[in-house]
Figure 1 (cartoon, rainbow, N blue to C red):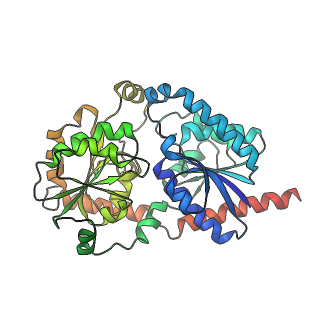
Figure 2: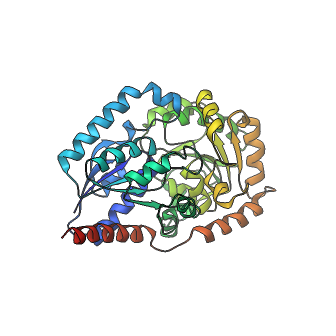
Figure 3: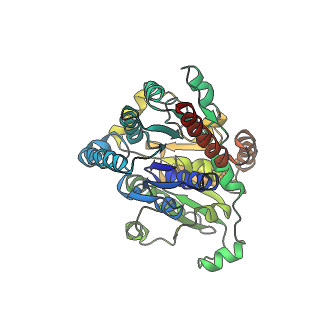
Length: 377
C-alpha cells in the first residue's frame, strides 16, 4: 500500500516515524512518501520537504510567511497527485494539514488524521472541517473522545503514544552519559527552549540567565533537530551551558529538573518524571489574539490533562529571570514542590498508560482501509 504522510514539526515527525515503523510490520508492501524530518527519513519515508522549512507559529509569523505557505500548499498538492497514494496520513500541524485534508477529500483521497488539533482549546469551528474532510481521527488525549462525541464524530483513542516511547526507552548509565558528552557529573537541568527559531529567540536567553544562579547544576540544552548549531552558538557566548543534539530522551532520563517550553515537551518531561517549570513567551499580537479565543485554563499538556496546576506556567510577562529562578528552586529535588509534582506525575502516567499504542493505531488504519476496499469490491 502507498502512504503519503505529512508532519510539519519535530513532535509530529516523532509520531509519524513511529507509526511508519508499525505500519511496515503489519503491511509488508508498504511504501511511504511525504513531508517530515530526519526521524521520518530514518524510518524509510521518502521525504519531499523537510520540517526545517515548515515551522511557522503565531498569527503574525504566519502572515509574514504567507507567500511561502501558499507555495507549500501548491507543492504538496502536486506531489500527492504525482504519487497517488492509497491513503494520506496527516500528523498534527493543523493550520496546514486541515486545509490539505479538505483538498484531499475533495479529490477522492482517503484521509487519516493522527493527533487532533486543539479544537477543545480554540477554533472550535474546525470540528466541522474534521467531520467533513477526515475519514478517521486518532486522538492522544483522554478527554478528546468525549469532546468529539458531542459533535457526533467517532474518533479512536488508544492512549498517548509518548508513553510507549518512554516505557521502551533504555538510557545509558549516568556515568556513561557524562563521559560521552564531556559533562561535569553535577545534577542535570534540561533546557527545552522549543523546536522553532521564533520560540528559541524568546525563551533561551531567559533560561540561560537563570542558569547562572545554580552553579551546583549542569544545564543542558536539548538541541532541536531542525535548528543548526550555529543558531544556538550566538546565545551561548559567556555561558557554561552544554548543547546536545539528538539525545533528548537521554537528557530527560538523567535530569533532576527542567525549564520546558510549552508543547509536547512538557508531557515528555512529565513521563520521564522530570519536575519542570513551563515557559512560554510569544509575539505580543499573537498572544493577545490567542487570549481572546482560548477556552482553557492552562497551556501545558500536563496541567490540561490533570485539570489542575501540577507544574508552574510562566507565560508572557511572568516569564522573567527572577520568576524562573524562584520557581526552579521549588522543583529541584530539595524544593518545596518536588514531592507534590512527583505524586501528580504518577497520576498522569496512570491516566495515559496503555500498551503498544502505535501498533494499535497502525492496525486500526489498515483494518479501516482494507474494509473500505472490500466494500468497494
